[in-house]
Image (cartoon, rainbow, N blue to C red; front, side, top):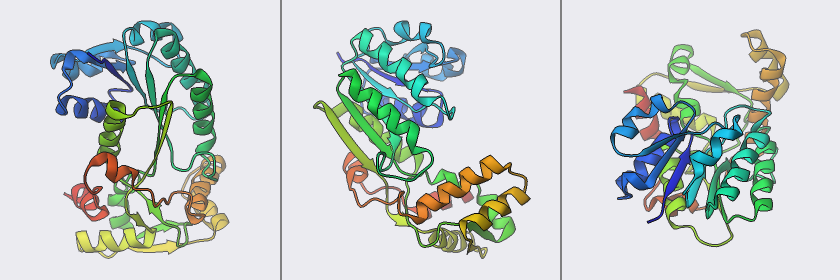
Length: 285
């Protein structure tokens, strides 16, 4: 039998991937949930999933966590500035453990994007290729949740402010990205497979209109030049570095860096991606 492991298995994406593997009929005993704090994965352990401690920042925990694993999903770390080193520790341990395939959650258009998040993903993709282990690169677009998580603020203010212009975002629900990751982990073959993942594209003006339609509360999109948006973010309390980073993300959207016409997501899902309206509806309810 094939043993599948998922890192970050108590996180929003990783936990969903484990759930998807189980729902697809993978025996719980063949699924390894790698987590920093095993006690937080009690629900998975109760279902028979192997819960193992594995911390990217503590390489000594990784050999035991990866022992006997055939296919690994490496969920990107959340600590900016240290990701390449953290991911490389997992990649090295996976290679030493004889893992037969590593799938990694990267970012849309890594290697050709101005997105300020992309550098560490590009570095990790390079480390994966250098390892010689067969790989699957899951280049995820934006999560709907990046916006629906702020729904209350949008409704209270009656607006979404940004600097994206007419740039489109090929977003999708976190649950859809989890299903796609599980599908790739189960089925990908070959030395390297790259999936560019995103759903139907929308602008922030489209998002505002969708929120208005779904909730019955008028929300408008207010577009600003990047420098003015950055200054406004600082006025509401963000430090200069964070404000510049957020404004840089919007600038990359304006440059179409988060838009794709790839059908990889729907192909892996075996169905259409969740619509923006359904995501807003779920968040509103």
